[in-house]
Length: 572
Image (cartoon, rainbow, N blue to C red; front, side, top):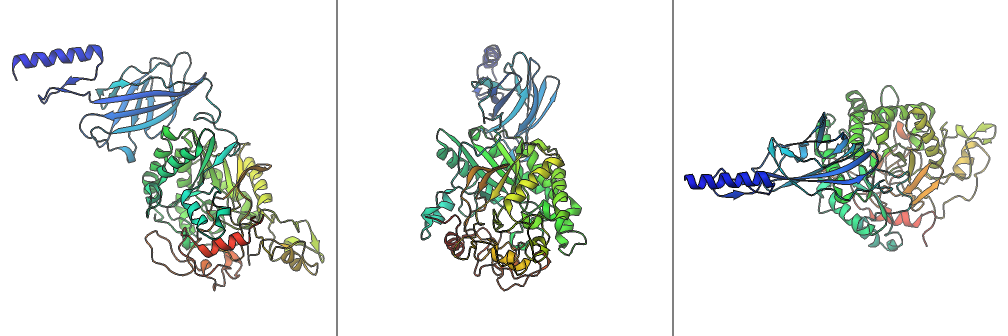
């Protein structure tokens, strides 16, 4: 290199250092190059004691397999929580390091993360950022902080996300419903979106992925508030007592669950683009109650459930999901709480609340990461049984002695959900938690719906003649014959209940009636076979399942038509 060219580049470097312009010396001798990195730091919301910020890092140098961004505050700012990066702070210096899923940073690529912090006095933008020790150019600036933040915004969850909000209509489910005769009557109802395997995050089998649904939710939102509902459902060793909904992850693959499933979901939900949505998550249905009812020496015990209790991966997985997703300020976590026909007995009720507290304080989670609980997800338990109560006595016997109730303390989902909410608060959850009840398939209407109590010949004739729920046993869960659509989704329908929801999309199968080879990890469960005579978990009753059902999650036209026919309230 000539002395003249060296002097010129040195002068340019001096100017760049003095003015902060986006130029630097190119040691390869090709002239002037962009600065090695650019940081866009914006304060999204700010109030008297805290703030939320969004950071976008752009890498203009060689591709990286990992990255670490550092900055220092001039004031007393403290990072309290974050998402999409591993954040730590020592004194005034903050370090944001990559997560496993966003470690790769190609030349010209960007990565975004965010955090919440506290401060007093001033809250100035940091002056200098370094990427792996190299100084970056600083772009952007304050993003229009509000003081205080808007209600329902990223830093202030509302008490009930469903109040005053529309709820997302999944266009894929809506199209399936509308294609059925008479389906247009319910095709505009909101339903949950199930993320039941890793591939579902980006879209599997030609279906919409998580970002697709969130983008569509923004379109549906318009200028008002909108709730979008996702079912987080991919624990290792999933559904230890139900083969039809077994998942892709083996019992010991908790690491994959964290890094390949929860972490990418969190990264997408934490994108500032979606900060205006109210995102409701139903966290891991049919998991924690299994550790109470289907383990140990009980007649209902299943060896695989003993495995999951011993390795702790249900508790760890739920805790990790609550911790990570709870860091996203506009996410509302609702933990699955079974249903009355599963948890309503004395020996199940308290222990289930206890294990939920254990999971909610595992893997860095706290009870503050739990906004509420959901009951009857993908189940059929009647919302209300009006023709009898557990306090009734017939022919000298308590109604609780009937074969149907079998000493359960609850006869329906509403009474169970309200009572279980009180138990959860007593166990240590926040007193303002709310409950959701899935009413997608618990209407039990049609011509067979009783209009009054049964005959008082015995407790069995009294209960069986008056109950709306027409299953052989409350333990039956797969594609139940005679079921109907239940109450339409609505906000704040009863004390302690945040909403009635259709978290299980009506018309999507619970499981195949016979073995169907598949690459989704879903097995054949005899409870989905209409000829099956039962097991201890349904008191050895017939399964009550519809015939010719496809794999769980697949569209089941015959079921959907039955649900419309037996809807209660009836469809107009």
